[in-house]
Image 1 (spheres, helix red, strand yellow):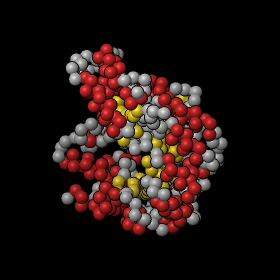
Image 2 (cartoon, chains in turn yellow, purple):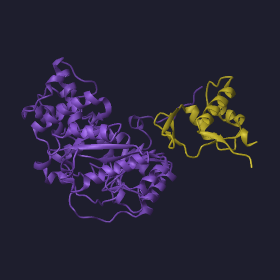
Image 3 (tube, helix red, strand yellow):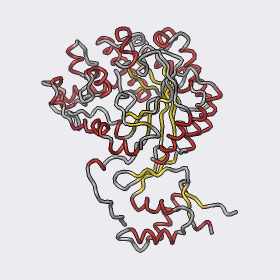
Image 4 (cartoon, chains in turn brown, blue):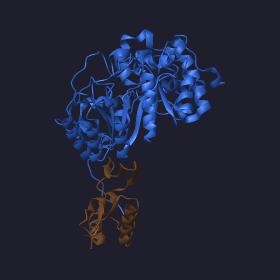
Length: 93
Length: 378
C-alpha cells in the first residue's frame, strides 16, 4: 500500500551543513526544521519506495547504539514530518 | 542513536556546504539615476543577460539547496521578463526579495508576486516625507510613484520593506519620514542607511554625504525615533547603526573593557552565508565588492567557488587580522571594541579590502569634532 511508503514533499529543501546536521526548509512557509544526522539518513530514504520497516533496516545498518524502540522512533519522526507537511503518502489511484 | 561522523575535518569544513542565499543584479538598466546610487559609475546602459541564462543558473541554485535570492540591479522591475524570472525561482524551490525604487510597481506584476507566495519582501527606497526631499537626488516625480508602488504592494498584501538613505538634503526630515512611513502609510517598520562613498556618490560627495555635524544630527534624531517607535526603526549600517555601535564602544571604553569578538576585522560576515552575481553573470563575494571576480554562472561550479576559491577565503580569513597591525588604529582607545567595519567601504576609500574602513571610525569622527549623542550616555 502507498500509505506504508512515505514520500518527501518535493518542494522542501534539504540543506546539509558542515557538521552532518541539516535544515529542512519549506519555501512555501519559510519555516526551517533542524535534522540530526540520523534524521538526515531517514529523510533520504523517503522516496516512496520504502516502508517504515525498510527505513528501520537502513538505520540499523548505518547507525551505532540503535535502541530497541527504533521502529517507534522512526514512526514518530515520519509522522511528525507528515504533520508539518514535509512528507506525505502517494494518493492511491 | 548516532551515525558515525565523516572524516577529514579541518577548519575550512566548518562552513556551510553551499551559500544559503544569493544576491543577483538582474539588470544593468534603471529608469532613475539617483545621485548616490552605489551601482552606477556611468549613465551608460549595457545589455542584460538573457532569461535563459538566469533560468539555467536557478537550476544550479536548486541543486545547491540555496533557499533565497535577492533581485536587484539596476531596477529589477524594468525587466520585461520579470514574471518568467520569478517563475524560474519558484520552480527551483526558492524564495525571493526584490530591491526597487518603487516607481515601476503596478498591479499586474504585484499580482504575480503575490500569487507565488514566495516573496519575503519588496524593498522600496523612500528618502523624504515630501516630493522635494525625495526627488532632490532621485528625480522629479519619483516620490509619488514610489509611494504609489508601496500602496500597490500593500493592496496585494506583499511585505514591504522601506529603506531610507540619509543624505544632506533629508537629514532634517527624518522625523517626518518616520511619521509618513509608520503612521500615514502604516508600514510595520523601516530601515535606514546613509549614502556611502560608492558608485555615483563618488562624483557627488559634497552634495550628498553627511558631514560631521549632519551625522550627529542624524544619530540623535534616529535614536529618538527608536525610543518612540521601538524596533520599527532599525539599521545595519549608516548613522543609526553607528550611533548604537559607537555608544556600546564608548561604554566599554569607560568601563576599561573590550567587547567580545572585537579587535579584529570582523565587520562583515556576509561571505559565510551568501554570494552575489553581477549583471554580466560574474560571481562576486558581494555586490559592493564587485571587482573581485570568482567565476561565471553556468560555466563555473557555484559549490566549488563557495568551498575553495582562494579570494573568497581571503575575505573570510580577514576576520583573524587584528586591528593592532594597522597604523590607522595605533593608539586607539576603542581598538578592542571595534569591528573594522565594512570591507567594501574600506576598498572604496583606500583601495584595500583588508583594512579597517575609515568611514565608520569612531576615533576619526571624534577627531573631526563629532560628538556622541550625550543624553543617551547620561
